[in-house]
Image (cartoon, rainbow, N blue to C red; front, side):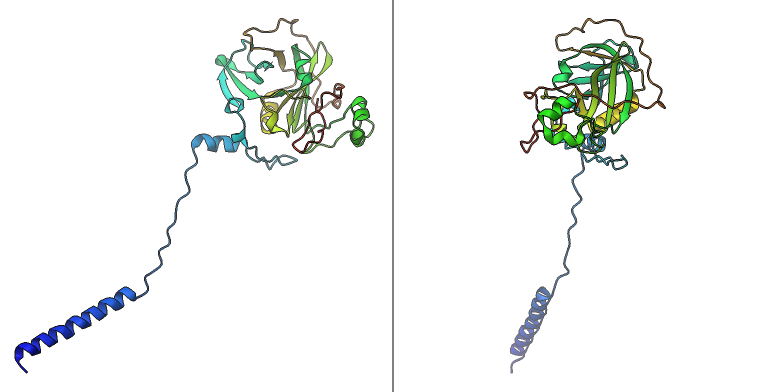
Length: 279
């Protein structure tokens, strides 16, 4: 066989061997690559709100997280320029804008969104937070029980509704007195977070439970309070601050006594059934 032909065949055999080796390499199993994707960073503002309105497991009745993204942001708890002109330490309920302010030094105020019921528009003026209570009992008045017999189990005679997540007074309540007398006007928590910033058919001044816990910790007995309407640009003219003396913390505190309601003022729940009415 000519030498040239021998070299040609050898080259073809070598090429075939290299090709086979190459094909075998492509067909061999490749290591599985698992990609890990880092979660999207949570914006700082959302982290702050998630903590502020998150679950509160250390409460006697652990509070569930609030879906704050479903609430108008202007009703979030926040420090703002004080629009009230009141002395530091004063509470101001602005019924016209559904805000509650706790006034601080330096022209600042902590602002909370509130919901207002019929009773929330029934009284305006100056008073004091005579006392406050954690996880209060709720006692519907006899007039309400007569209209809603299913509430008999929570009547005054029966001792009222136990504290808890379904209690319409929520996690905290603050009781407003004027000239030493109970106004029957309250600031209280509410499990119905969707009513914040709205006027509903019952209640006084209702707050998100997380917010009312925060306010409760900032407000001692005897704190002055003004209930007014700032939406028109002016404060309600009312009598001077009364000199009511706060009850000592150690003294037993009376349970709440709601104002009577008419059947026309009934708060309905998402399921269409009437809800117990807070103060």
